[in-house]
Amino acid sequence: MKAAVYYETGQPSVFRYEEVPDPEFGPGDVLLKVAFVSIEGGDTLNRLRGAMNNVPHIVGYQCSGVVTAVGDNVTQFAVGDRVVTTGIDGSHAELRAAGEAFTWKVPDAVLMEDAACVPVPFGTADDCLFEFGHLAAGETALIHAGAGGVGIAAIQMAKRAGARVFATASSDAKLERLKALGLDEGINYVATDFVAEARRLTDGRGIDVVVDSVGGATLQGSINVLAYRGRCVTVGDAGRSSAEKVDISNMRGNNQTLSGYFMGAELFLNPRVHAMIANHLDLIARGELRVVIDRVFDLKDAADAHAYIESRQAFGRVLLTP
Image (tube, helix red, strand yellow):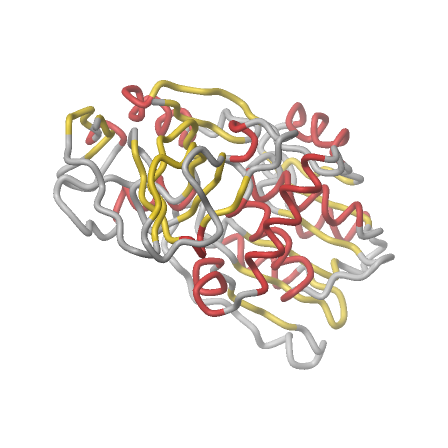
């Protein structure tokens, strides 16, 4: 099969488009012909400095496709099924093997390109807002990187839950587009201090739930903007700045909470997540949630796709197709 591979981590230019062996699959796995790859933030970070399980390495968490073979122990899937899968790596290729527990059937009404974008960002958004953030109707939610995959999913979910939805983005144009998805208050973090602006917009009260996928120096602001009994969930390092020590000295007196979240751990350890993601696919099929796709690149152009994501021009997901 053909795959986008690299022999060392680094900038997008490390990618090579090469012929590599087909993936091996075990008794509990499905093998699929890849239709679309959703490039996740973790994919770009892994390419930059992550662990390489094999050399050459095929990066990638998430993709949709059609099942071409199933392991002897697989009971929920058959050859010909349309599916979306997640895994530690291996999505940037023509074929992908994935465990049955990390595979979902795609409803007939859902496009394969949309399905490719669902499990990681929608599952992450849901858990950050509700399982860990305990967001309730009438509260405020601040979503960082609102124009990204987790951001677009979280804005819709928070609005559906009856929250007043705030989001940050790098331009007024992106914030304007987010209004159609449920955004109430947009904050251009390039032009405005988001802590001061969020407090101004809430008459000094602050935010009940913050979903922080940026990390670095932004995380301190996310803590500082919390309301009394506010909850901040840190879920990534999209800002690519190194981890910083944060001052939590005011959190105890304000009964505030800081939680970390990694969806991979929940998928491995908590069976409820599989049903949650299946529900997201059903909601998309019914038009109650939306996927937003910015651009689709050929798999051979994986370097260009990763570079485009890192340019911060994208609004929504960036996909590859073999």
